[in-house]
Length: 85
Image (cartoon, rainbow, N blue to C red; front, side, top):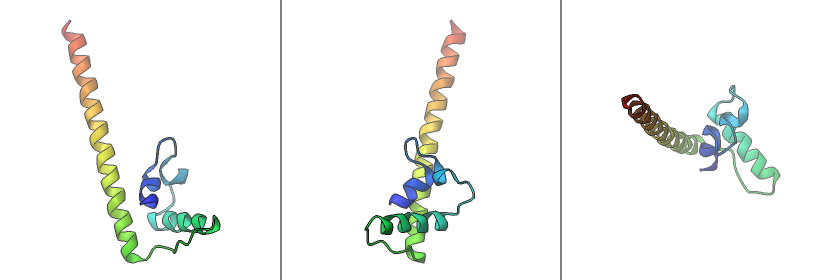
């Protein structure tokens, strides 16, 4: 789901497209508008689609959090090894 992934940020693109004030629904409607302006046949998301987008965004955030926690644990282990020397 493009809207969900873009909402939480992709590679160098910041979350919410850099506008912290945007809600998920506003962001998703903007994505649909951009797609339509580019010739796509996208509709504004309805309530069911917004629910799916929200679930996907949460899933993506959970994965990002787990990855960051893993990295933090590795840094902690490296620091402990350095201190033990």
